[in-house]
Amino acid sequence: MTPRRQLLSTGAAALAVMAFGPAFTRRAAAAGAGEAFEIRHTDAEWRTRLTPQQYAVLRQENTERPGTSPLNNEHRAGTYACAGCALPLFSSTTKFESGTGWPSFWRPLDNAVGSRTDRSFGMVRVEVRCRRCGGHLGHVFDDGPPPTGKRYCMNGLSLTFLPQKA
Image (cartoon, rainbow, N blue to C red; front, side, top):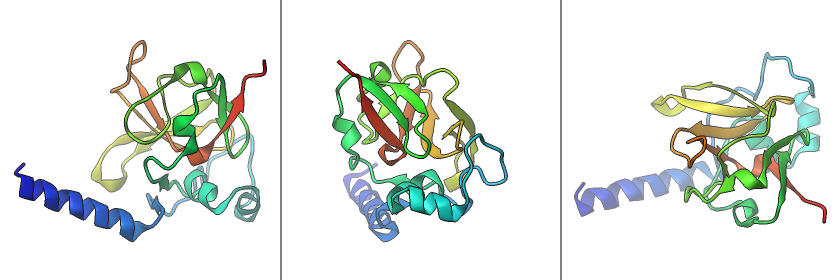
């Protein structure tokens, strides 16, 4: 790509980010709509339990802006849990710096997440959701480090960090 085209495409992407506000809207359907999960709340209950930003990510399947999560700089030993239902999802021992701007892990805890095909934005990806409440967490890709080769690219707003007790 020529420098001019690269500049134009970068500028267009930046304008899109600004136009969509703090989160990119993926689709209007609520996370887990029509599916049965162990933990279920009405839309109004979810709105009172979560911050507006958490609600947008976990329940409306939005994505936070890259580089905005304080969890990117979390390096203590502990567990990352679902911000919607507190289910432990990832161990800090599987966290790695992916350079994407989102907290990334190479493996979830056993029986912690579910997945489904996401065909939004004209591409096919694998969406990762909390298996207990159906909350949208992020996506998984096949470009992670050994031993799994997976990159679980998670929204920091969908997670809470629980430090390991000394």
